[in-house]
Image (tube, rainbow over all chains, first blue to last red):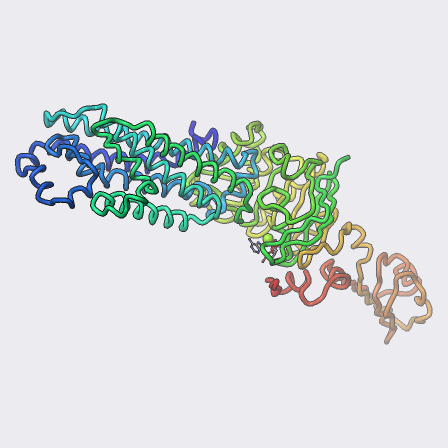
Length: 266
Length: 312
Ligand SMILES: Nc1ncnc2c1ncn2[C@@H]1O[C@H](COP(=O)(O)OP(=O)(O)O)[C@@H](O)[C@H]1O
Ligand SMILES: [Mg+2]
């Protein structure tokens, strides 16, 4: 029964958004995996990237070999589409966890039952973590199936690493959105600031490959820890993973503390 | 016995604007207490402070003897609350919402809950978003009463209830009181709650003006009486009777105002032939106004049907 507690109720609330995002991302990934042989027959990806010259580096410091499926997926999806999509999913929903209950006015009734404010935030956070992993798993599954159907080689290890990093990056942005909305009660501000931050961080990381001056501030961008260590070739880097997890944890704690202390909107 | 609610210099400022100031209020258990004041007086602020939804600027409060902040979870198991602007998860059905809230509470008597659903004639299979305001209120009332709260706090509950639900609601309040439990109702309209309440507290511009029992107020009720005697009667026969004011006798008709009991006057009048007696009772509203009122008081808020008072 999905109405047992705040966690299961949130899973219930998230089930359809999760389903549709998983389907969308999965279908997109599966589509590219399925059509990869056709694409590579029509055009030589590596030659194309070469022709772009230094601009190609915008897709990553070392984009690997675009003539392999995994390199192609990185170039087409993992460099922007998948992280942007999942960040939007995680941040969009997390920003509504407390602020949505406040603006709808349901928080008064909810918190007049014996639910600690902290548990409310934690249980909802756990639900979005699971939702993100479900989306990543579905995406991976579609990719593997698509690759099998098109008889392309797709190494599962690097694929899993890249998907796990998409989740961790999204959870970090989700935690930022959660912290802003828990501290202010303002869902719009939480979404706006988080999206602006995502775009700024993305640009810093992408442009740092071609503009040397940006390298000094590159560590401020979460995207550096997402793909900077080239997970498709080397798997997950412990240090970079730790940075993403720590950022998530810090903003989750900020959300917990801020929400605990605040006057809630009527 | 511990008081149901006890506040001590409870104060809340929103930034620099006034919410409530130095509220010292004690509500004893086992009564129905009316918390009265015009819009913007600070009723919802007081209630939301008691529920730990907002935090006081200064002062303290205890509910059922427990600290409102540190013992919030213990309080929430024993106290229920129906907010003024009742918002519920509209995508759920009434039944699903009651299941969810019951699970959050942890120990609900399902048989009692179902009895309540029947009593207010709620259809639990309908989605909340499809319910009328009155039917939504039913869900809120069942949710509040189903935990058999030791204290139930209702913020302006009577707005929008249809007469049948209103009656059932009043029965529920009276049952709660008869079991020694406590009901706390806020309202900006005295006539809506005066017949229900044992005591009322009056709040205006953030300050508690008075706490009175309804019985005491009624004691002070003023009545205008007009007695038509067939023939002439000596005015002297009624002078000096207890509680009589503004008396005059004209063409065999006596007009006066009586405070409290009319017993002495009626007994004095019975010595003469009485053709007709007219009695006009002043409402508690008017008594309130006489004691506490000015233009922006309760009476004005209630009488005009809307609040003309806006806090600076
Ligand atoms: N969130 C808030 N921010 C600023 N002022 C508020 C807020 N809530 C209430 N107030 C102010 O506090 C006063 C008391 O409001 P409230 O407790 O809602 O009154 P009531 O419930 O008696 O109508 C009003 O002047 C109102 O404008
Ligand atoms: Mg109010």
